[in-house]
Image 1 (cartoon, one colour):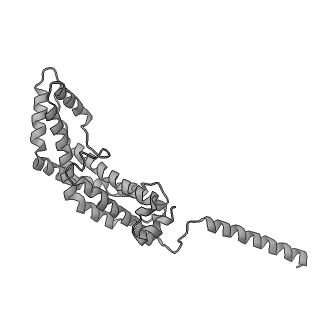
Image 2 (image 1 turned 60 degrees about the vertical axis):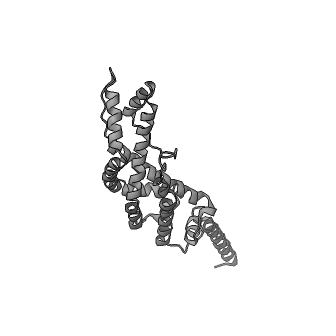
Image 3 (image 1 turned 90 degrees about the horizontal axis):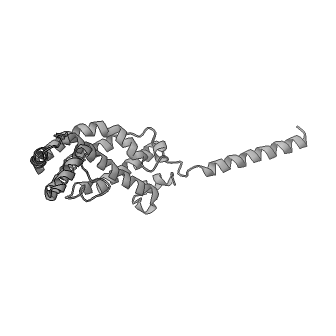
Length: 234
C-alpha cells in the first residue's frame, strides 16, 4: 500500500469514527440501565400516581370537587336535571349528581388494592418505547392491559356503593318525580355501568397527571431510580 493510499485510509477511518461518536453522543445517556430497570422505574411512577393522586379520589368530594374527573349526568339524564331545576327542585337535582360521585369515591377506596396489584404484575417488554413515548404512554399501556379486568372488579363495588350511599333510593325518587311530570318521556338508565366507566376514567386520568409531572418536572423525580430512568427521555 502506497503512502498516499495509507494516508487516505487513515483519514477516512478517523472521519467514520468521528461520525460514529457523534451519533453515540446524541443517544440518551444511561446505557447501563436495562429494560428491567426501566420497567421498574415506570412501575414506580405508576405506583406514585396511585399513591399520590388516586387516593385523593377516595376522599369525600374527591370526584365531586375535582373538575378533571367529576362525574356529570349521562346525556339521557341531563333533561331530568334541567326539568327538575326548571320547576324549583334544585336541591334534589344537586343531591342526585353528588350521590353519583359519592358512589365512585366509595368504590375507588375499596378497589384501589386491586389496582395496585395489577400494576405490580405488569411487565414492560417494550419498556424503552414506552419511556420514550407520549407523556401518558405508561398510563395508556396500563389502561389497555387492565381496563377490562378492572371494570369487572369495579362494577359490583359500584353497585354495592350505590346501596351504601343511598344512590338507588335518591335516584329512584328523582326519576319518579321526573316521570310523573306531564308530557315527559320516561327514563331508566343503567347508572351502575355509567358510573363504573366514569370512575375508571377518573382513575386513569389522575395516574396520567402524575406520570406527566414526573416526565416533565425533574423535581418530581423523588427517587434515584426515577431520576436515572426518566433522564433517558429528557
